[in-house]
Length: 174
Ligand SMILES: [Ca+2]
Ligand SMILES: [Ca+2]
Image (cartoon, rainbow, N blue to C red):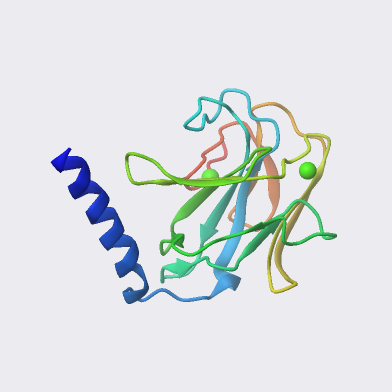
């Protein structure tokens, strides 16, 4: 019990200490890096389900506090998901956002934050959109997707199907 209390306290301290770190609001450096609109066995969430997912990448050298940044699956309603306070995308780091049918931001027992949006990605083709205050910062349009094959950004800036998905890590093409 004491251990649990300590853990809760240290998490609370960590969260309250976050604004003290040098985080920026350089949302232009938050890029959609990989998506999976038909997730079978590639990635499970904490409920052992396999929702669609979007991988965000911070291409800058500074941690970015994502509060206020929006995600959507189209241009009509850009604010289908809005990041709340306390979610920081580390410098050069990755963040997986599950596109489920319910919205939830949950800190798991291991301290990682699991994020679910209330929208899903259509395997028949759709968009993934990052925006802030009505301005689109990054958008990816994709066509028909295949189960467990991701759609990923290559180093040359082109998007391609990827049968070696890497949720939470640099994209790999074989
Ligand atoms: Ca959708
Ligand atoms: Ca990846």
